[in-house]
Image 1 (tube, rainbow, N blue to C red):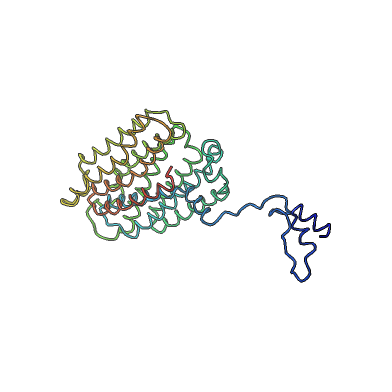
Image 2 (spheres, one colour):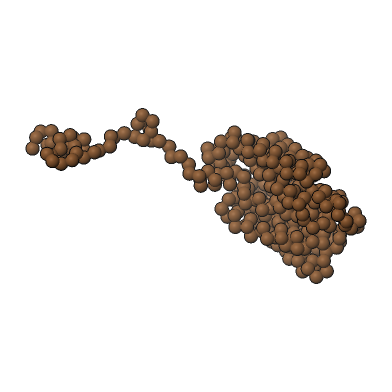
Length: 357
């Protein structure tokens, strides 16, 4: 054996073994010993897959909470005494865009705070660029306003106020005392957007006197706003926990809304629930609302830990669906409420994969 081959056999070097192939044997090709990075200095980073990027945006936009949005427009339409139509569909589209704009803007505004408290969120973890989130917020806001404009000038005016409230909340009011009130106002305006768009699209059609006016949706908007205020107040403690006062107050508010829905009567000019269907569905909707919102809040009162507080917030967000169904049933449209309730299983299933908070 030649000295070179002997050295190769001892050291196990594939390059030396391949340096002198036997006669009649094809040389063995061995790739160079280099790393995969530029110039062999570092491993090349794996490019995130489309599925990974899609999940990051789903977390950023909190898509599991999207199913709580269409019910705002449906409840607003029911309050006008009109069937959902083209204007309602445009209001749903505008609401979805403005809601997701708020989600993207929220994470952009909180990127430094999330880097400390929630480093797993898409922006601080590097899965979504801050600039991309801000561009998405602007584009979604423009899309929402464009859809609202197609429903008429009154709907555009309400949508503009909603968009301004969303941006003011995320950029300025969130960490002030006005934060819960701003969020409650946004949700109330979202319901009024559905009422205004529905009434505007159906203004030429005959209807009950006074029932088609958007002002008929004010009681429902106030109820939804009150619920939103309570949930937002609890959400301020979901990172650190330790507060029993906020979930206790929210629990009292939820119980009060449920009792009012069963005991109260429609205001003057509002249509009454359908005798048979409304009588059966309204208690079912109220029960679902109390079970979804009150039970997690009670757990947070007994043990105000961050996980239970976050669970109470998530339950409060999902409880908006049976609350919207309740408001629609009280306005005389139990089947519209049933349609809204159909989104609840989807929201619950998706919330197990993507957190709504």
